[in-house]
Length: 241
Image (cartoon, rainbow, N blue to C red; front, side, top):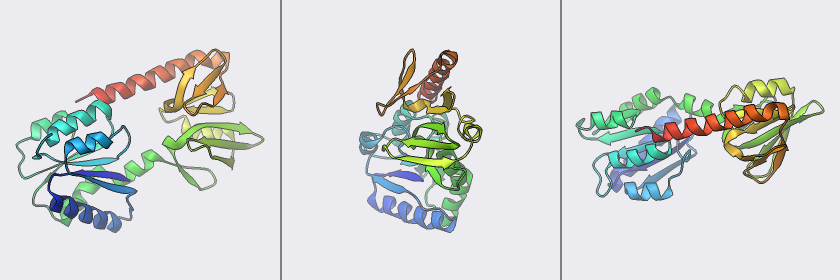
């Protein structure tokens, strides 16, 4: 789980980070990272879509307020969970407009943090990001570029150029991946991550890692439509505020 805390008060940032680590540990979770920022401007300089699963925003900050920062985030990422931290509920309507997931009122304690985490659901976040393969190993869905089936095994190609082979049927891999909106079959035996497509040609699909995989004539039009729908849905999610 990847978390960001944005608060212009160092003591408040440190307090929340400590409490989050303790509460997540008590629930059986180990955060991948908890990055702290002293302002909305600093967060947005480092931010890109899908970088974080949860972002905590203090509403009353010098420079960009938490609401202004949330608006910028939502223009670029429609999925990240937003939690506002404030000493009053005066901004309830504004937090609703940016689809905030929780409103954490100061002063808060560990029970408040636990209640917030249970409401957001770390298990749902983890399941949406992680794929359990038929051999029991796990990988990050976003790291997959494409998979190819041959000789009773599926080879998974990842963004960092490493590959992993799993003894399984193509039908099982399709049921694991193609039930999700970001994966599609481009030809018999090959599944691509729609987010990793750079261009769809007449006979092949060029991926963002510069590899190319074949696309069948029968599936090309459907794949182009799936890719267009995926891009449109992501833009619409990111544009809601």
